[in-house]
View 1 (tube, protein in one colour):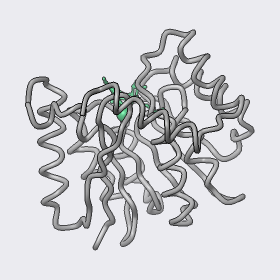
View 2: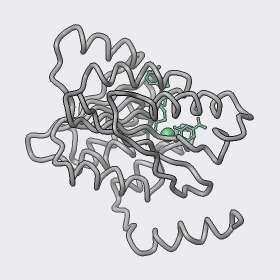
View 3: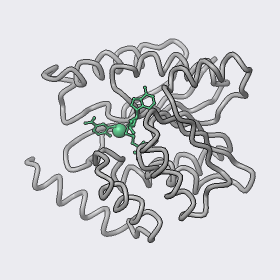
Length: 219
Ligand code: SAH
Ligand code: DHB
Ligand code: MG
């Protein structure tokens, strides 16, 4: 099956389920105008993340890698009234754009953006005894994923759902032809073999084939 067919299938599903409101649309438009890389999750992926949060009844979500806050908005919209999401972002510029997008989406009360290196932020949370999260979404620099997973486990309870983006990357995890592809293959093996996780990778279409790893913390 070639790329055009994958694109047709993605468009087909989007045509059925994706009706983006102005907050989501403007979140992408403003990010693009500011020159941010277009590496946000796809609309289909956003729906899936939203559904996982809603199905699991999550009220505390941690996100690693905010960009313009597109994935964040999908997650935060699944939160109950008293639910909270903390999102970690290295770039102050990305964080500023994201905060504006949360304001426009009416989600500022539920979302806190912390600027700085996410590993340091997670270590600080672990030291300060931060309560466990219900969902942790890993989507920052790919060489950091194994460490992000271990830090995530330290911020988890039994049943926490850990999700990682970009686990297929158009097959570069199989070919090993890019540094990120190799990093993600190493991550996938670590994730799959982890004795504290029950998990899988769900391949999905986002122009090319990518995937998310989903794991449930066992102990
Ligand atoms: N989750 C977003 C996309 C995130 S893109 C969405 O789907 O809409 C990855 C983001 O991680 C970028 O904004 C990048 O600046 C940020 N990032 C990269 N390295 C980081 C680090 N060490 N700590 C925190 N954020 C980092
Ligand atoms: C890239 C990063 C991402 O998180 C993503 O979802 C897609 C692409 C990238 O760095 O190329
Ligand atoms: Mg990603």
